[in-house]
Length: 321
Image 1: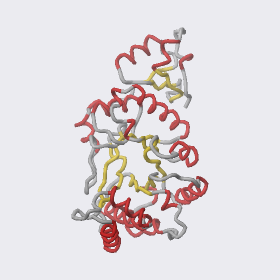
Image 2 (image 1 turned 180 degrees about the vertical axis):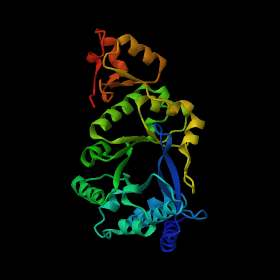
Image 3 (image 1 turned 90 degrees about the horizontal axis):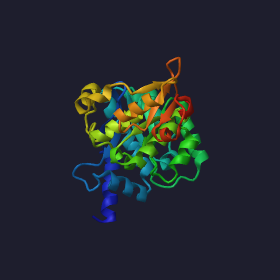
Image 4 (image 1 turned 180 degrees about the horizontal axis):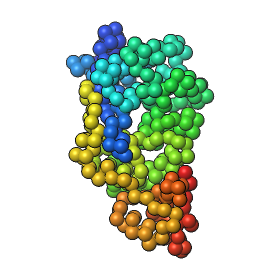
């Protein structure tokens, strides 16, 4: 298909607002429920721009990315509201659109009012396909959304051009780990180290981590043991027109142990007890430590055990939370 034909197809999609919204569930393991859905957009099924890769690439090339994203948001919000889905609605937004000087202020808020959704139900998921240079301007734009009640998520952490700096600058409520670091994590200690580091930073910044791209039960089990609570991927549900309502049944069917409590230790636990716990949970990279008040106060990492001589936990304690 020629570029001219693709541009013509894009114009028809924008004029007719013929975008199909699909929803992929994000599950909360600790509560056994659906935390929310990420809205994903497709072009008409009979169109060469059905694929989102082609659709958004040609829109960016033609200078119509902001207009396309606006149509996608409208479709997603309306479909989410019509289905009366609970939890959060994650809307993908590019920095280019957020920084578009001619984008009408308040359009998204007005749309939510029309369909009966509150800003507190919506998460602006920042997708980074091109380099971001003006961090201050982007931060100002996102603070504008926060002030209206929206939450912010950073997509594909570890894969973008400047995702770590974006995390530091924007302080999002949610961070989504790129699927590269999830794929085969049960067989890759380095990937577990990466995810473990992200979890520590997330605790310090009060962000919630979402692991996406989960396709194997073994991956899900490792992530659960590491303390990842929000999960997404084909294993838990593919993008589909109808959202998921009953998370408990989905999780129980996939992995019954998912709904059990994470192992923890107290401050007076012995090294022998800690080693025994790590032995029973082979993929566990760290244990949460509870203080005398029963609240988390730090972590014990598996790789700290061989170099410790004391019989108590205090010398092992890292990363107070």
